[in-house]
Length: 85
Ligand SMILES: [Zn+2]
Image 1 (spheres, rainbow, N blue to C red):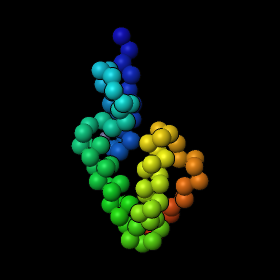
Image 2: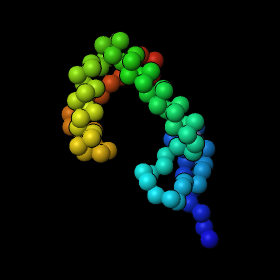
Image 3: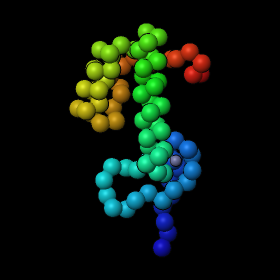
């Protein structure tokens, strides 16, 4: 039997995704998923503090991604943060 492996989107490690169903697993562990979530929250707070993003933008994107999972092609702004390039 051949097992399927994926690369963790956070740490890059190879892992075997669960086979019990649910959403596609893109992180190897809960620790990586939580690290991603924490970093994303920090990034959004910085983007809002620096004026690259507004709370209204965040609400609009959140509402549109609930309606169309995985879609960001709705004209949402492309955000560049200082030092992120
Ligand atoms: Zn990982």
